[in-house]
Image (cartoon, rainbow over all chains, first blue to last red; front, side):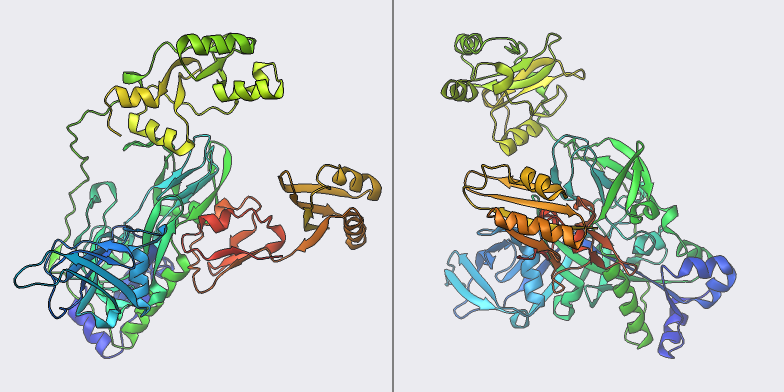
Length: 495
Length: 133
């Protein structure tokens, strides 16, 4: 048994024994007792995209002063509903002119790199703050305070993602290829901080940590902290002015949005044999679920369970098929974080702190209460879809379209199974080119919907593919209806 | 032995069966890895399946047909100023041209690259680029 004070004494004398989390399993397995006695600190690290991040900034007062109402930094809006020149710049806020290629996270990166930032603000005049607008450039150095304040970072573990649909999708877990073409995962497994102290015995409010190259603090459990499902996380704070660009980066998750790569390292004091054991965790002992992101619902289908060891191997097995894995976190930078933290301790620049309060162990995430009822395809689809048979003549198809005042029709085989779709445009083109047969002119790759899909998911699908309707099919690919943008608008479903 | 080449067809050449003729005339197999064919021009990435001599024969023949031929070697580059070695590009590469080295750095194998641009698109740090030929 050791205490944090004893370990700090040893740091002061330059005697503390520090090892990296990936070195600990071997040390522990060789002799658990000796590992607990001799190792003082295990360094852990993670470096990955953490969306729930942002910065509190204070710009100082102009003369005459301004009570900022809205403020933009390099055209990225920051939240200003606090005091006159305080703002919170969220990492995922998009730029007003560059979309997802630049956002709050990139502004934070530019600030840390010492770059000049354009600041633009508008305000309402008051007796004490008569200025109405301001435009200037500022740097990190010019600010009174600038600190990173991240509501949810450093997940203990996070599910892996795949996509069972026939189209590539873009998610916060990266680009997911069709037909489970890849599996993306995040987190650093056995070196990830909370995996080394899963019961938060040493990590709590006030724990001093490595945060993006600065000394920062854990300020509480993160939002959606869910220790019961092994998905605890942390809220952290640190001084932006002390941070180093190599340990943070603004990122564009393609087709999705902006995020901030955050580097976190936490020293785990080895106070007893129990803690020594938890720091000896290995990638093969840590498993996550692979979820199907092809279904845009809160609860997603589980495609399988997999260990970090398998994920890091580059290929895993799903239903007998070899699938490549892609990491969203950097092991290389995480390792540098562990080493830097170890160096700080060795150089007597970093001392451990005892948490003033522990993190909750019993909370779990609850869903949002939504008063508006979720509506599904089955609620509003047109049940009697007019369909064409593949042997129908183009004249017959045209007549059906005119009679029913529709501009597209699913094409089915003799069992009503969907084989294509034909539109008025296809018919016009066929006339121009002299094509005569339906199978020659119809589109074979049809975007479909299913009865149990929420309307919002269908709206997204129509938008994304620039189409106005999709056939609704059952599990045997039989057409059971059609859902159109008009159905969605007219039947009073909000977009 | 194989090597990758980029072929550019100017207007006029697109309409003729150049690839088939090249294979018949030289007796060397070509594997088409990518093809963008448009009205005015076409761009192909091909593997020439043969030794250096065979490759030269194919290249000379294609040039004689009016096709612009460039050997592809480096193909992709990751900007060390931006790359954080996360690996978001690895699983999306259709030809396994990107992998991790032993120290978890991104390792590029330009020979395998077909310049599809999936990695450029997927990179959160915007660190990947296709090297110009």
